[in-house]
Length: 288
Image 1 (cartoon, rainbow, N blue to C red):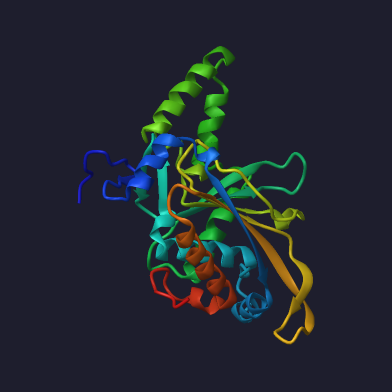
Image 2 (cartoon, rainbow, N blue to C red):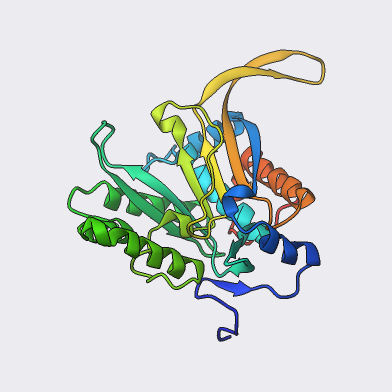
């Protein structure tokens, strides 16, 4: 089906939605002014057992928590399509694909460079195909001789004389607002994905709030914190110490309502409590 009037290259304009969600972008046009923050604590016991089983055959690139989180977020957004909406230029759109993005640190040092990784998922993907794609992109990002497209474009823009940079910035913001930024420049821009993930635990930081941006189209940001032990209580009040991780989710509250978000978090928790569900295709329905 071809693009209709009002559609963007990356999304379909939504005309038939309720009046509240039509009016909200007009009254509250900035994404950063409409953030809802959700914090979740995840017991890692089932994930650890799952990863041990996946790594029993000693694959070249081991399965890890981050891959589980990326796959769980992609599956959640695939099954909860309103989470894949975005608002641009005071209009609401349904994104044409489900994607995830993250930053890769080339070397863990103060002067180590960063690169951008972008996962374009398909409904038939499983954790195995996502694992392989993450491996491919991380390997590419950590190569000293390779640069992702968006970083390469920024390197070129950086060379523009300072006096012209403000003009270039104003033009870029206008193109961004109307969905006309050149694809080559934003090819790996994380803020054009369905969800941006940041694994702060890998640099020994706790999970917490991360703002959205008015640039781009991302409506969901997921922070993964540091793994730590904490007490868990059963129904009888007995306590056990288990490894856990905190998640911080920042969401554009204009794309859906509180009940929809609640069910979305319930699905995400289900996938993390039963990670074997990630062996199935992203489009496979889950009871939760």
